[in-house]
Image 1: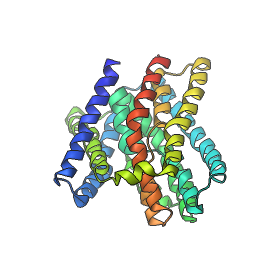
Image 2 (image 1 turned 60 degrees about the vertical axis):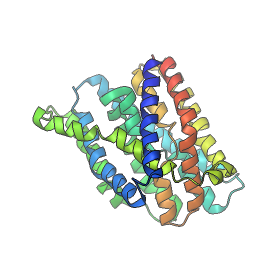
Image 3 (image 1 turned 180 degrees about the vertical axis):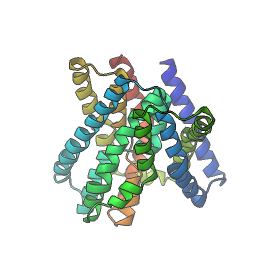
Length: 309
């Protein structure tokens, strides 16, 4: 509990700094966009590669395979279920389509990577990388097809810096080689900026909220309920049963559940704007889920800490 409280307070301070910087106009829209580009195209890839410069173990290989298999099952099952559920909701057609992607595709990058690293160190980050690779596979194929009605953008999937770094990290981990200290140290130092920078960016985004519209959007609450409560609750139940039946590392089980408990991914807003698929609804839902995760995510972390031991 002390470690959990430490992580939550640390992240809250970083997010608060981002809010203050935006409120006092140290960060504006242009700077925030530049920081996001810097994080996604440089700092985050360094963090991913640094996580693979880890002592090889067969247990971790099994954990990576288990995480990949769990992620495949998660995306395949939730896409089918959310697609069926969306047809029964009193939403507009474009809102139904973006509802599916927002409930299925969480913020595995900005929130997931730094959180897993903060909670479980390099091992947690490496497992999050595996989960995110499956995310990219589904998001840049079926996700884009669902939102746009067009074929998925495979070029974006393959040339994404995070995807390239993820493949490089896996190749590095399974190889007998490790980065020499003179290279590993600066790579780790650059990667260490991931957590504070991502939290500052999130804080800056929160500071621009049309707060009343966000808290009054009933449809967004339906999305947040599915994304932050129902889906992670089912994931927790499934992993609890599996954890009792199959020898799975506690960290592996916890990472899988928590990667399913993150707020709606910001890529949903980007694609909804690009293809004009209910962009305002998507933006309000993403922001609302980021606010509500302050309540739901610590609860899920607590449950994982007492169940997977």
